[in-house]
Length: 317
Image (tube, rainbow, N blue to C red):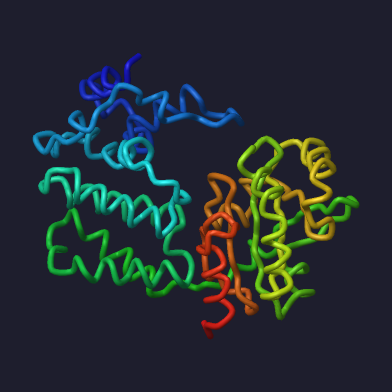
């Protein structure tokens, strides 16, 4: 069915038939059709006939399904930058897209939705992005008067009390190394107290993850030497054997000592706390094990990743 037809269909659905988590109409339809599959879902294919004119509709601002899904269209279809999902750079790119392409009457709705969605996905759950988000909300303070915007103030207060340290439950998440021994993240951290740590969440079935591991080896090796960085690879594969086989394929690129199979994968305490719902995903922690970036750019030589490493190294968070 054409996505626009689906949107019209959703417009006529009796909302009382659905639980609150189903009200996000497009996401619900997608999860029903594609949920549980390990292959990548293509929003480009799914939204192939939707135009900017279709969503640039201030007359629909009171429609619950339009409100729930406007940000999804922008985030996954119309805004075309290559920045990592839910990163600071992607956030700013979406904000610029909204202000340059949408009717002004939709700006408040779209930006509010963006802030809430990013927050739910873990943006703001590190030292750098928490400060960025607080300053952004402060810039909207004069406009935060309606009940629709009160949640921004709640997010701001939550960010102010953010603790950059991983909780004990996350640190005690169990993982298996390539020798079959079980350990925890806490034990791994204890052996590298003076180093910057990068958690690299990946899986054998994820081509971008594998490509990054192979293509960025020289870059990673350089940061290991120059900035005392330790790379910790955490697979969220459901099948341990697939992880083991792919690890053997990548033996020239992976650090054997720091390559682990994360028990319970995305459902582990560590992945749930960090909101690891997509991969590849890179988490940077300083030598005190405080999260400085909960969603770092891909590690390569374009400067963005290294800038965060340098900031982490020089700052006294």
